[in-house]
Image 1: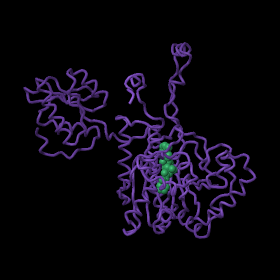
Image 2 (image 1 turned 180 degrees about the vertical axis):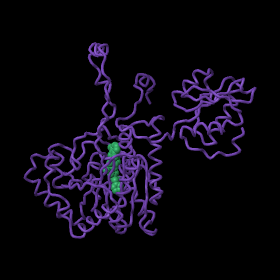
Image 3 (image 1 turned 120 degrees about the vertical axis):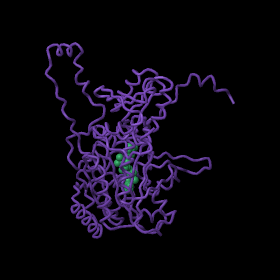
Image 4 (image 1 turned 120 degrees about the horizontal axis):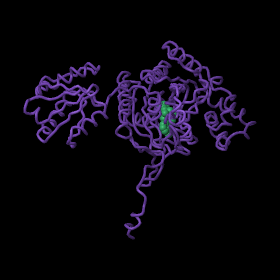
Length: 491
Ligand code: HAM
């Protein structure tokens, strides 16, 4: 084999693939927050976690999501493994859940079976704001029940998930009917588009025969204009589907869940029947930044700097446009979506089994939370910093750190730093409320210093009482009392 050593030297450092991103330590708090909320909701509504593999037989997605969908046509990471089998990185979660339901004979469990998941998904999409090639979703699936009350319950769960974290969203609802309704609707839709074919994009021209429903959610501007006046799915529902939809809406009314009827909502996956829905973020109107009166001196400076002021107050995250009507397809992406898939279990080889589910994208959710500066609670932020001066103090501090941590505090340290100044600077930067400081003198006296980082006031306390003393002070800042292990009050 020729040596690659020489050429490797001049090669560029490998970089992150397009559409992928690292989740940095400082950003993990957002992910933890969402994971925690998803787990809480799942527990409250009785969902059990199901983790399916990231890699599945490619046919699983072709058969479920649909051959003519963007996801399968253009976006799947599909390749032959070493055995020559065609496999795909999962582009979505529902298909895997259905495969697992059939494969593990879950039909024999009490129905419905409620499952949830959270993890990575892959779509070879064009990377842009809110669209990644590897992204995270959480999802909830209810398999084995067709009652419309379940549709309302899943939508309530989805809506409340966002409402409870104070994110203003709208629930967009539609019904696409069953297979029979599809056949009837497809005919009228093709009739409508036939005379307008020339205005369609190339993809839609092709889809018109194969999968005309896809024309309604095409993102091309001309196609969107045509879709505005297209026949509506709800006008072509069979009696049973119509009745089902009416009941779903009645339940939503009963639950006082606000919703927007959106006749153009058809979703981008083929397995849907009857109810479909999406969660859209409410348009965001960023708070106006009060501009202080400019002094003559400042005005001059702006002139000199080419008046960069507007650039300075620009926010880094793209705001959701504010002027869109409530049921216009969002130029910004949906936070989540879902619906019924009553035929999917049977299509995949199982017994006829109705089902419904929802999944939400985590990156888009975090963008919205950050944009609005919504609090996620300081779940990661340390409360106390342990500082030390000198070798024997470092030993004591090491043990104290562990004792504080076991007592339930979020603790930070920098044992590799020697001077007090850099340690205090770090404590300040992290934003802890208090620092506990131990040096030679304190070791001799059996004491420790507690420094209030805001006021700078330092108090000397008995070393043995450091935990209750820290606790007492943190309570003043509204930090909830910890359950202190009495054995840990004496170190
Ligand atoms: P979906 O609408 O394809 O539905 O995806 C759900 C959510 O995943 C989207 O609303 C979005 O927030 C996020 N998402 C999708 N693609 C990307 C991407 N490229 N980058 C970042 N986020 C993305 C499904 O996947 C269905 N399995 C939902 C479902 C569950 N239906 C029934 N049960």
